[in-house]
View 1 (spheres, one colour):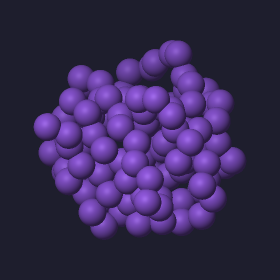
View 2 (cartoon, one colour):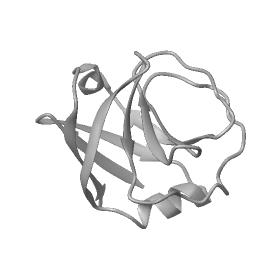
View 3 (cartoon, rainbow, N blue to C red):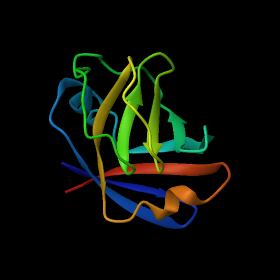
View 4 (tube, helix red, strand yellow):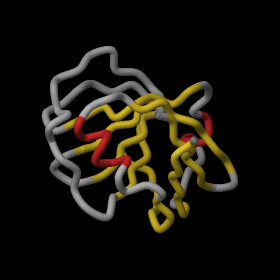
Length: 117
């Protein structure tokens, strides 16, 4: 499954993984009333309307910029544009296809996420 992530007049496409957390996330789509904001100088975050199941929460490797993750303790999406390492409570949902340059735009923006059919 692929999703469109749009904010600040820019769009990115992400390919989602196949796990229980992703299926729970996909059941919320489309999402129109989110805000995306800077966090920790390596990611943008957005709070979801509700928490996702943690069933897709196995440890993963191959962390890299462009990863789309869910952070269980806070119930937020984390879209990484810088280096990071797996930590407990982080579930990878997918990866951005191509450039993640829009994530470098500083500030808080309205965010929309849609399924691409």
